[in-house]
Image 1 (tube, one colour):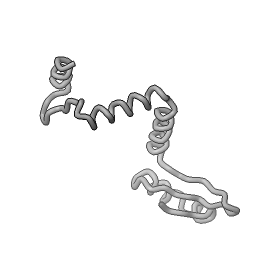
Image 2: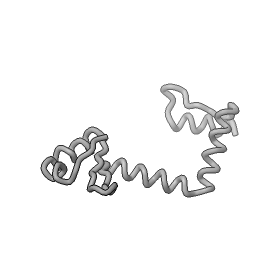
Image 3: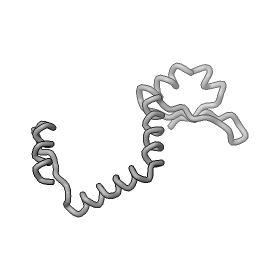
Image 4: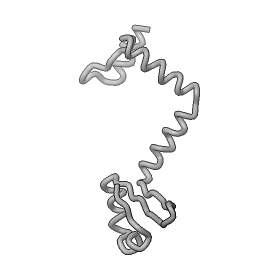
Length: 96
């Protein structure tokens, strides 16, 4: 994570943007009085919004927790190395 003030950000905007996009860096821009903004890449922002959406759905979270319990209890099927997704799905359908 990098920090910058407004003056430094303006003078070096391209390098900060490049670091955020290319290096997945986060930039905190301080404006004083404990106020500021955070620069993250669009990919990171979209990932955060997707996570927020998923976590806001009780049904989805329940399904995730059930899946975690199934895996923990050995109630899962793994795809074999080199196995195509089509073959895996056929094999998995036979075990239900």
